Image (cartoon, rainbow, N blue to C red):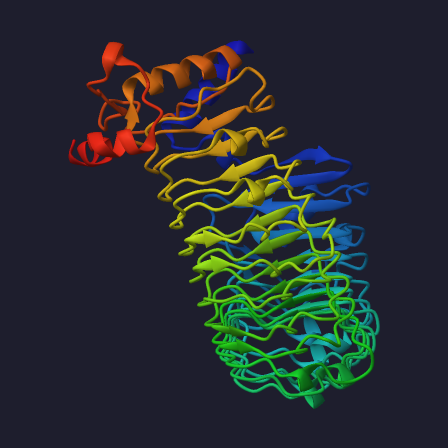
Length: 535
């Protein structure tokens, strides 16, 4: 017997047929099976048993699956069928009519050019249909009338240029409809009383009128990103009173008008206008959106913001303004945003931060502020006075020369502070003494040649620090690294040019007994920074 097995395996290897290429079906879990190298539904029927619930067909060598015109009674009890890895599908006259119990059907990547009504039984029980990544050009109302039980339909990544009006009207249970990455030129899909999620991103949409969506009263999410929209029609919320998510990112929209949000009290929770061409935000532009939680405005061309632009946003938790052209933040701009947790202002043109930008009311929920990649030269001493609960503050890649104790005294809960790539010449002892909770500190790539003598009680929770790229006096660096070793604080970075010997870590100074010189004027007189830059 063993000799026969060896002979069979040797023959399989010689003939180029390996175990993974042999036609077979195997149990995955819970009556779900994977079948390999099938060429037809008739072959599948030879394997399927009465207790099988789900089948996935995977063809690594064969280039497709066919079904003929013969009845397939043994497939009537299957509830789930996944043909997305079958290599292609050629449907005969019967199509899926024999799959009387089928509830989930995945036909993505099957090279389909059409899907016909006659390929499905009338009132088919199908609830989940995925025909994405094919070459479909049309979705007919006749097809959808055969599938009245659909809850989820995915037609994305096809060649659909037009939808028949009210094609989806008969789908009384449809909640999710995906039409991303097609060639649609308008958003008109007609009426559907229950639809809640509509995705039409990455099409050729250029025009948006709220009346085009008048038949979707239950719509919760509308995704229109990556199209060619230049403006949105006012009053969208008259047609979509239940809308929670509106994503129009990566279009050519040049303005956000207050009139856009007219209508009944909007339920909107997420508004995404990122990657457009918006240039200004007028006062009270979002004042109707009292339930808004997330506002994404990154990578526009915003250079002007009215002082009252964010008023009435009492539920706002995340505000993304990075990647714009903002040079000035008006006083009280973020005042009264009492629910705010995350504020990102990185990659703008800020040169200073005023005293009253965050207002006088404590913002108890604000834990993350990103001001990195600006041109900040000055932080008003009271700029962060209303942010005592801040946990992360990012200030890297600015032009800061010094830090004021009054900036950081209120930030007793701060856990992460990035100050890298500024122009800091020194860090005062009283500033370091405020960092009771700090766990990560980045001060690399500044102009620091020394730190104050570090007392044992300084930075008690520090775990990571980045210090390279500064013109350290070697004696001062020795003291610092010794203190870090004693505290088991990580300061080296794998792959850093400074710790591999490619770039210098410190400068040898002509001080008596190689002592650490902690006098800025004396350091400047020795030209330590200039000497380091020339190495």
